[in-house]
Amino acid sequence: MRNFLANLLIILGIGFLLASAFLVWQRYNPRRLAFDGINEIEFSGNKDGQNAHPIALSISDLEIYLPVVPANNTGGKWETTTKGVSYLTSSANPGETGNSIFYGHNWNNLLGNLTRAVPGQVIEIIFSDGSQKRFVVTHTQEVTSSQTQILNNSEDKRMTLYTCSGFLDTKRFVVTAEII
Image (cartoon, rainbow, N blue to C red; front, side, top):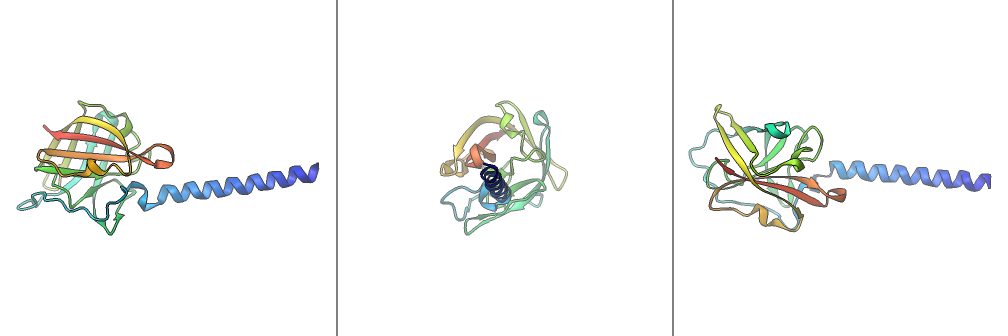
């Protein structure tokens, strides 16, 4: 009985170590924030004459104040950062016609509070020239990684901000906002 119990505890310990290793890998996996079936995104956002680029994102109601890091999506690899929120540079410039896409990890020090967003809250984007643009949250939803329509370009001045959610980050929590 003693050997059985010792072997059982060893097997359980190995199982817990493997599960922990999987969760650590899952946390730092760059595909975590990606959407299925999207290899590259090329939008027709108007980038002419825009020297200023976004450098910070703020949602004061949710206590989110983050630097913005430019990111690309090339060959299905979504660049991400652990130091702020990523801005997909191939999407529209924030405040211009089109869909500006921002995304980041669902960590306490990043976008962990984003799932508490509600319509009416204000998102502020600060630019490198000191200017600011404000967006009001119009819609929130949780989608699967195959529901890529949230990334579609738009005819209005829209911003889409999303983070991972759901069991093992299989879903995306999406906040859609329009310029004020």
